[in-house]
Image 1 (cartoon, rainbow, N blue to C red):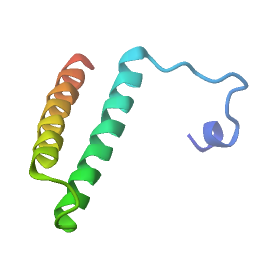
Image 2: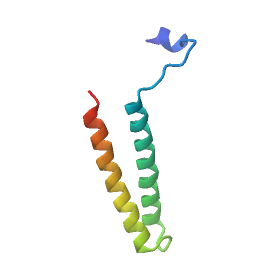
Image 3: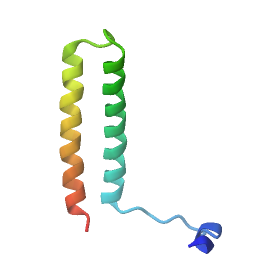
Length: 73
């Protein structure tokens, strides 16, 4: 394993499309979660409808992430 880390292949390895989708979904979910946390820490930063939208988006992204994870073997 250390040998592979010290001597990477000359060509980059292409990621499967499902893995790319997983990484993108995780990144968006992390950003939405951080946004929700910031709005909870700073009162009055965002109106209630925006916070509700963030929570709904967070839930939808969790379902999307679960479906991607079920497809991975």
